[in-house]
Length: 259
Image (cartoon, rainbow, N blue to C red; front, side, top):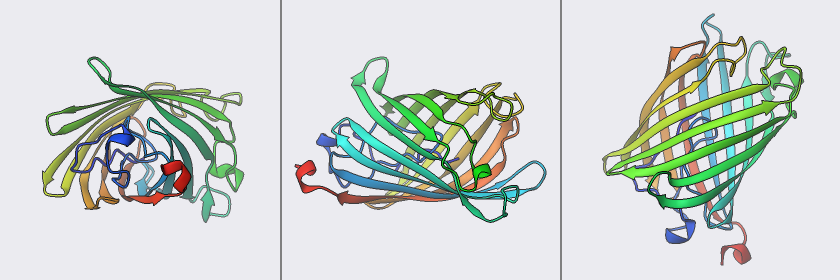
């Protein structure tokens, strides 16, 4: 799980109103914001997370999110995880399921919703080996509200996922919520604090859960942001975890599209 790595800068959701090389950190899972990558530009989010389960089993996964700007208010998300889990057949590294989504910002600066975006996505059962994924086709919808309260960036997400299958292994309906707060500290150094959870029936075993995430962020360059932190469960079966990550704006990938 990775949180919004809010850099110590004020996010500008409209990609036509800012430097297109300025990174828009979000993270492949958990919190995201309503901002989008500039049209024709590509940005890569890469992380690594080490989990310690309640039975002391240790697992690792590296989520990748490639974002491509489609318009000033829309981007394509391509997500794929590399996983290491002793329970996976072969006990070595494996590829997780592929997820494709489009983030579309509907309004900006609304008095109630702030900057508001939707993120519909589909997850395909492409994992290798098969037990590295859920074995289901998932359809999800995430609602995203972002606003700036003084120096603090606030991002609120709620979402629901509906899966194929009979629900005997993985629940057919899963829900989640997040509240993320990013703030500048000194210079290019910032911090993020996030609360997130999965209501009852959203995780295997029909048990709700929630956790807190906290960690520093660092804007190394306008086009490169770094982050790290810890995740501590508050309720339910979520693991203790540490994570590191980076966000890299690779620049314009199509001169025609970037005009």
